[in-house]
Length: 79
Image 1 (cartoon, rainbow, N blue to C red):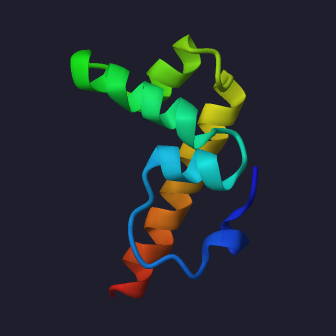
Image 2: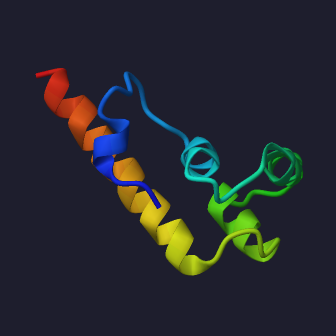
């Protein structure tokens, strides 16, 4: 999984699917399937991807942590 230094030029909130794709943990096809499932079920995308066995718990946690770090950087920039 990449670190925050790879994301310093980002200008907006990154969705978890975007982060996982950029890190090479998710294909566009798998993301599409997961988003289709999400349209019919009230589940978080990460939970759907775990159920599909596309990612594991550690990968999801790392991506969520990276998402929080990106949001922190964006928030500090706006101050």
